[in-house]
Length: 90
Image (cartoon, rainbow, N blue to C red; front, side, top):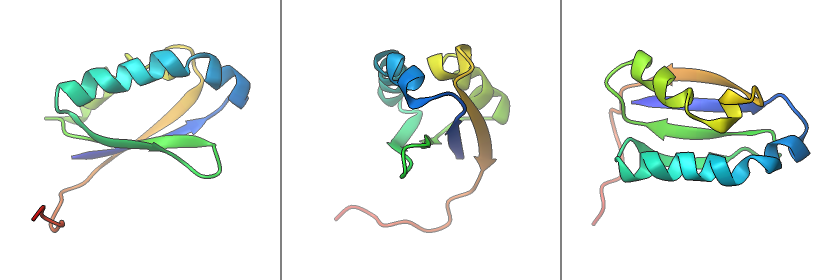
């Protein structure tokens, strides 16, 4: 599993211009089962995504499709982790 941290590097107005495309990108990977959750940082300075992928290279390929990456609007930090405990659904 991977935690992807996004940090906006352009004004929020520039980010907002691409939000519809960014949401379509997120939806594509929710449907594939690779994105588990995503959300905004508070204050509004970026976001985070939890991603299932087989390798860091795969995560980098996925990120390259994000309009926020394509148009150099955000920086990405990729953190690999191994879930060791979680809440199960009842």
